[in-house]
Picture 1: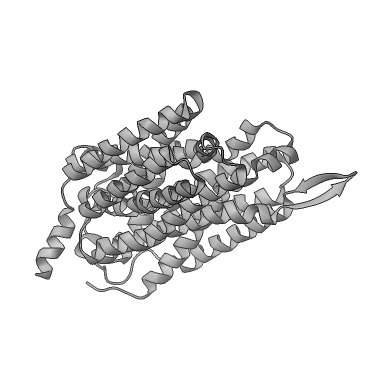
Picture 2 (picture 1 turned 180 degrees about the vertical axis):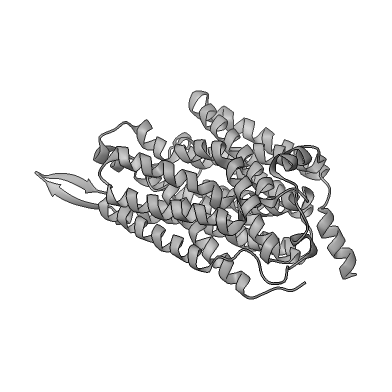
Length: 408
């Protein structure tokens, strides 16, 4: 078994398009009111430009995973890359037409599962097991950077003029800029992505895998995989709801829109830091379960702070802690799922985890809009303790244990 330096070029091309698809997802999140005035539509129609990604993912998750696992990462990610480039350009070319922009968002939403579901498959094809959590962490890091870029840079790219004393916004430059980036990232993937190295990095990289529906049945029979799905159903769904509805939490603390935006940004910055550190430690110490426990355990004080902190400074600290630990659990969990569900396909195990979080995220977001935000935060605290309990119950990854025994 052998590793190749080219694996880092593969990871770089994949990470860039991973960041780009997140930018396209949340293009309008930080300029919702501006977009509403440009397109002259309701706030719900603007929110739909982002929500469509979650809805399409639920529909396309398993088909995308099937294509990735059956035809390979070059085909699977290639489809995502082409969709990203084509619909990114369309979105920019018709920047002033809401109907076309919505159509383009649907096309970009179709691209997303072909890209993010391939993270662990790239690890299995190109990376040895003691680098795979780090590889998943780098991929997640670029996802978070894409989100931060969309939140911070998008408002700076919006042009405006004064007409009869009124400020009139123009989204053309911003959307065309994102379209060009999308096209470039797609070209990089198509040029540099390769299916497999000449020599596999580990023995399981060349062993036969279960087919998609066999894999689903097999995974649902694995005790630890079922517990992990429940953990991510609760934890990832909760994170999706909190990050989406951060404005509602900020209003409870009497924060203005600027401070609310900073609180959300600090949470993502914490996630970037966590994704850089904890997956690397998971690989270094050859432990998955321990770092999942630590991620959930130390995310709880952050959640408590978001719920009960009254000062702006306290809320900022809590937001960073919450993001650092909970968001870093994702890449570790993705790799753990691939290991405990082997020989089920990697893209399928990761896809099911993200799917569970998307479904619960939609449910939790609806809850935060229908019932009291404060009550939902209390429920989330209870949910975190359930997730922590389940993280103690799961067993260590058998692949990690096997590797440790060989190293002794």
